[in-house]
Amino acid sequence: MKLLKKNQVIIYTIAVLLMVAGYLNYSTNTGEALEASANEVANTANIGDARLVSTDPVDENAANELQNTINVTNTSNTNTTAENITNNTTTQTSSTVSTDDYFAKSKLERDTMYSQMLETYENVLNSDNSLETQKQSATEEITKINNTKNSIMVCENLLKTKGFDNSVIFVNGNSISVIIGSDELTQEQIAQVQNIISREMSADIQNIHISTK
Image 1 (tube, rainbow, N blue to C red):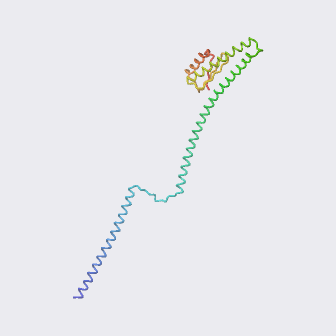
Image 2: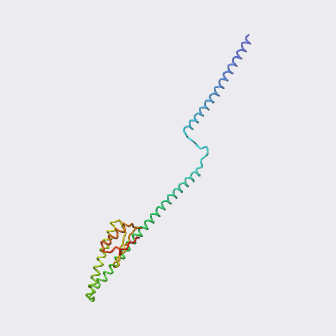
Image 3: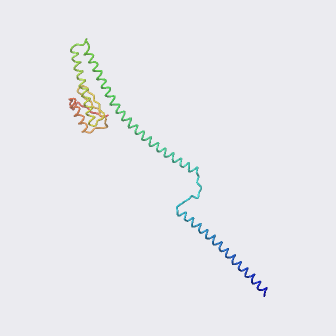
């Protein structure tokens, strides 16, 4: 009987140990499974936050080359645009300066011619060797030139008030040439120019010749 009881105790002890070992093994596997599930949930949460990370390694040299190419392209486009703007502005400015120079030069040459004519007639007038008839003619020519110069000045100023910023007038006897700084003139503008010249210079319409520059 004692031997039987001793064997039963041993059997019970082994059974208990097996049960404990089985429980511990189950607990360990369950813990690992729960941890794996927790990690998977965490990874899913990160994807939900849209934190997309490339699985390919980034080539920093290639990225730098691409950025440099973009910068060079943008700089090139900017420089080209700036160059086009500069060229267009230069062309327009050159055209404007050229037109302004033409009118300024024409007026200077005209006034120089009148100054030389006045000087010539004044020399005749002041010369002891000049006849009285010559002096009288010289006086009349001086008066005529001064009147013409004054009339031209008035006409060019009046034309400017009408919007013709650039104009130059040449008088050759009864013929009057008017050059206007414009690509083209309307019939109304032509009539304005004719009225001013005709009124201020006592000229006939048919003797007024208008052109553009």
